[in-house]
Structure formats: C-alpha cells, structure tokens
Length: 177
Image (cartoon, rainbow, N blue to C red):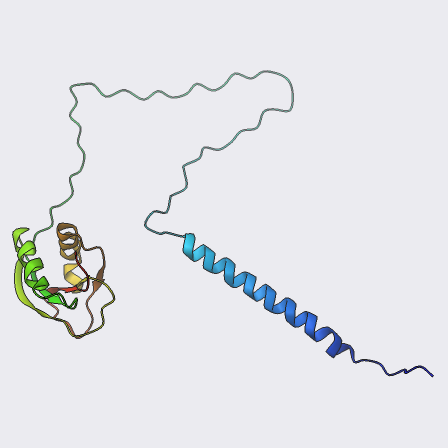
C-alpha cells in the first residue's frame, strides 16, 4: 500500500522562498553599493536646461515657425565685468604636527607654509590615528583652511575635533605632501 503521508507545504516551500528572499536582498544591496561607487558629488553634472518640446501638428499643413528673439551683441568697447572672488586672508595661526614617523617632516612642511604667508604657531608630533594628511579647522576658519590646503596641496580638510584648539588650523601629516 502506498504511503499517503503528506509533506507539509511550509517546509517544502520555505527553502525556495528563503533563497529568493536572500537573492533579492543581495541584489538590492549590490545595486546600492554600485550606485555609491559610481556617484561622485564633486563632479556631478547638473541637468542641462531644456526647452519645452513641441510636437508637429497632426495635419500636413506647414506652419511658420515663430521668430526667434535676437540678443544684442556686446560692442568691442564695452568692458567685461566678471566678479572676482574675495581674497582669502592668511591670518589664522597654523599648528603642524607629524604622525608620519619621518623625522623633521613637520618642520619642513611648516617652512613651506610660512613661505606661503601663513603664521606657524606650533610644530610637533601627533599622537593619534589620523588616516591621511588632514587640515582641521574651527568653524570660523573654514575658508582659510581651504586656502591653506590649496597653498600646500592638502585635499583632506575637516572640521576640528573637540580636543583641538578652536583658534588654530591644525595640520596633521600622515604621508608626504
């Protein structure tokens, strides 16, 4: 006599549903991660300005396009006035600290910073775990921190942490600049 025991449906379908659920979750996570890798907010392109599109009329009657407005061309004698950016003053004091382990690197970078017109108020060693060369700035000195970064080639610029002075730009050297 054949065995008429029935296999519970829930256990028979749980494995495939579980596999599908995990697969879907992995696909969503992978898509999000790939989107994160591809997105570069500093080089994001703004959408182009588009003009409204017009569709051709359904009849075969030709239409005359509307005249396009003309803009006056500037004369050769008219001066061009482009706004010039405000110069960033180099009034902030700068502390330069070495975490690289390269002897004398803080003093060398401090000399370069002074040649660019900055006042170096401290040179020393940094005890901590900064992942790469960084300029830390107090809230009111962000523009000067950016200028200092441009002057010496440091691209990692962050707000100061609570243990840092609030009146000084702090440069922590981890690798060569």
